[in-house]
Image (cartoon, rainbow, N blue to C red; front, side, top):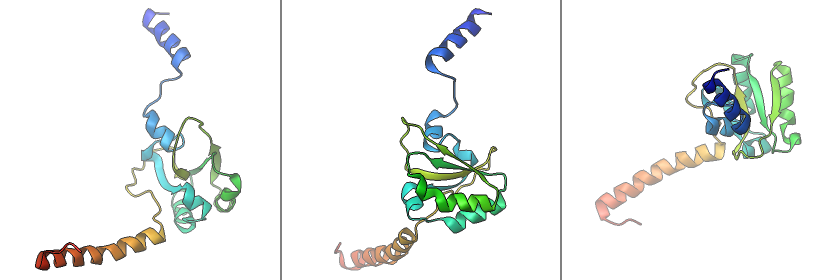
Length: 150
């Protein structure tokens, strides 16, 4: 065994196996962002949001897998597990004590898909954004013509 190979072997024993993009893997429950089709936050999982979007993604990608955050109580995942069973989609619970992530459920594949929009938007958040647009325009016009910020 050459000296460099032995050094690599010793380093791997001390620090663990070398891993690409460790921060990204911690955030996305062990997978890479480029492989993710859909994510649900812990709050969305607890409120049973995103079922329709998840079902549509499962239909489009029958080879996908669901990664469940092991820090969330398993009873919250029952409707998602049932849906996965309907489409023969595998699921597994991922628990990493050191990782801190707000994600509760991830639908991913084994290859890169590079989907731009992977999050499920809450209806309340979407409605709030719709309401804010006219308010910002009105505030700008009021400021433009009157000089008042209120």
